[in-house]
Length: 162
Image (cartoon, rainbow, N blue to C red; front, side, top):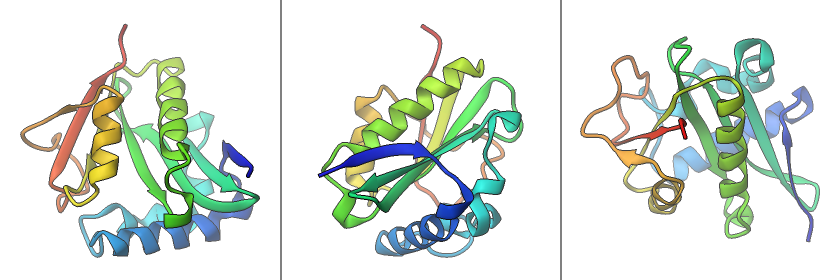
């Protein structure tokens, strides 16, 4: 079995969109206030790149796109980034791909000078919440001001400063 993580290119936009919508629906993240409804989902590769200090990775299992994870500035802030849209199809789970992508995104964030990383998610995404806790994210009592995902109910922050 081949597990590969690589930067998103336009050839994978349709796959990533379908994964985000399918996994979002699986966990009830449908409609306004959830990541799958963000306009960028239509064509993710146009929204991530070094010029905007952002990165989106895709996970391939035996050549099939099974997931993705991104990192971008939080509301244009130079000091805070956001771990975004970590979605993995059921057949891609359990291979450590989510962890690999998240760590790669956090490493990228440090190279871009971000001081901390925010994320929001759902209580129902228990495995993801546990992953974030294991990666050193701390729970917040409320979302960071300016989040677009006001329907999420878990908010976390990690310092990127050693």
